[in-house]
Length: 133
Image (tube, rainbow, N blue to C red):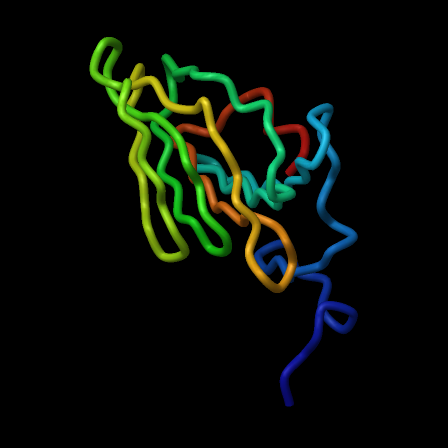
């Protein structure tokens, strides 16, 4: 017999629980963070049409992202080489090594939820997100 989220309190398993997503200061952005010793998962649920992802980089973290629903229209690449916009769809992956600029994003919602779902993995974990999970 399989156990459900309600049946299982386990520090190693995380269920797709809508109530576990936390709204951020950016309208339309919700996230759930799971932090381990050496890596971190940030599961984003972003309303289609939401804005607020500025072009940025991470000096201390690599970021690997996979689009799960909807689409991400953004820019990525070293400074001076990131003018071209790229659109990623469900199943597509991006890699932002340390110091590589990425963002200036447009989030395109899917037909079912009207959201863009992105799983971001950071290594090492980002300190600013660690208190959430």
